[in-house]
Each structure stands twice: as structure tokens, then as C-alpha cells.
Image 1 (spheres, rainbow, N blue to C red):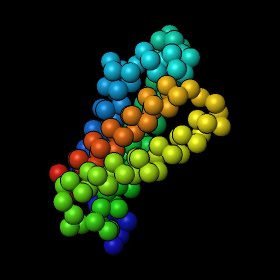
Image 2 (tube, one colour):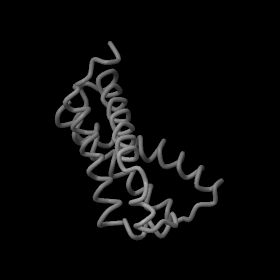
Image 3 (cartoon, rainbow, N blue to C red):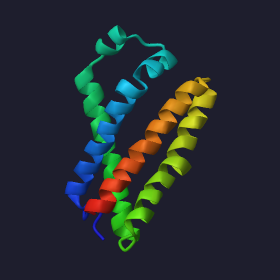
Image 4 (cartoon, rainbow, N blue to C red):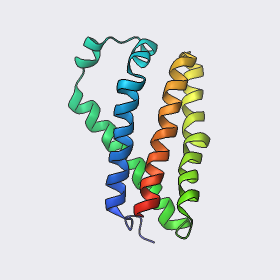
Amino acid sequence: MNIFDVNWLAVVAAAACGFLVGGIWYGPIMGKKWMGAVGLTEEEIQGGSMGKIYGGAFAFSLLASWTLAHTFASYMQDLSVTVKILTAFGVALGFIIPAIGTNYLFSQKSKTLFFIDAGYWLLFYIAMGTVHALLG
């Protein structure tokens, strides 16, 4: 299989869906708690280079989405919607969360920040997995 032989509509749609989850999670749901946990004010956040931040975040979402699509196309073509969603959830639970957890332990970040970010990554991958399962 060619590494670029994936459903590109699903890749972009899933990345956009994951990106939207981030906007909701770090906005109205956990925005203020997250700002407190990272020690930033709204003014400091708005003073950042939003184009670079959002553009980079979306590029990373596309990469994650393509990787999930490639995995499904290569190894899991005939799996059910539920199994694909659970696989995406497993990626977050088994790879992403331990990685950020290890980083947060060594950098002595708060448990609050860990749980905010871990919750986001679980939702991000569930959303992407759902889109890939339905469109892929």
C-alpha cells in the first residue's frame, strides 16, 4: 500500500473535527482552568502569534489524522466503526497520555494541567476516530 493512499476527505475532516474539539475544550469548557494551570493571562495568550499557533496546531492535527487513516487503511480495513473508534481512543490512552504524563512528571507540571490535557487528547482521538470510521 502506498503511504498516501488514504481517504483525504476523512483526513482533513477528522483533523478539523479534532481541532474543533480543542477550541471547545480549551475555550468554554476548560479555558480558564487551563490558563491558570499554565500560568498565562488572556492578554498573554492574545499577545502570541495566533496564526503560527493555530496553523501549527492544525498541521499537527493533519499529521495525526493522516497517521490514523494510514493505520486504518493498512491494517484495519474491515473493522467496525466501534473498533476503529476504540482503536483511536487506545492510541490516546496508550501512547499520547503516557508521553505527556512522563513529560509533565519530569517538568513538574501540575496534576490539574495533566488531567486537562489528557482529557483533551482522549476527546481529540475519539473525535478523529469517529470521523475516520464513518468516512473511511
